[in-house]
Amino acid sequence: MRHLAWALVMATGKAEKLPEGADIPFLYLNDRPLFAHSVAALMQCPEIDGIVLCVPRERAESVLAAVQLYGFSKVRKIVAAKPGHAPCMAAALAHVPDDVEWLCLHDPSRPVLDPATVASVLRTARRHGSGIAAVPLSDRVVAARKGSYAADCSGGDSLWSVVSPRVWPAAALRQAYPAAAKDRPRFDDDWDAMLARGLVPRLVPVPPSFRIRNAADLDPALWELKRAGLA
Image 1: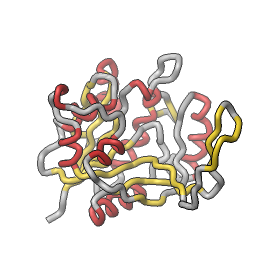
Image 2: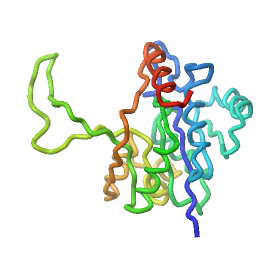
Image 3: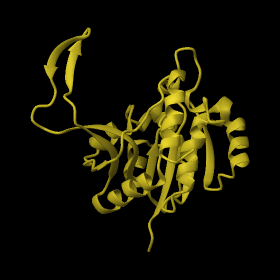
């Protein structure tokens, strides 16, 4: 029996805002809002059976219009949630059916998403219990204080940058983010939540993942999309 896998695109939360108050997932890149690039990639991955979009309440109507315009038929629910990672996760998980075994979490500020990467991360999760996109760091990594060298971070071990998508067991996420806020630990990141539950993240090497942190990153991101054949 095939085990269902859904995706959660988390397009809300304080970390997603630019200093001037704009929402990063709703900046336009190549005539589409950023979140739409992530959803388009997930649409093209046969292993993803459904998608939940978590968005700010004031954006829900325009997101619905975009989903209809672009024909994102795998989108099962647009969740209007309060700001913050934990409330968004709890609200989104409430709309994921019980028979969904795996959840693929993706950050829409990383629009250069290859469907093959999603499939690879999901295959790893089914084999090892989790699948986390990560980029090996080949250059020296150091800690600094006020721009001055403080310490080496290598320690003889290989270093990786943890990115997204990340695939976790749906049951573990439901336990980490219960519907009742009073029962919900304050995890600001799914990585911390899953480590607290004893899950061992299985890293999946992927190409460098371009993240948009401000409007100046849009042009380089478009170049990366075109280079990857995704635009």
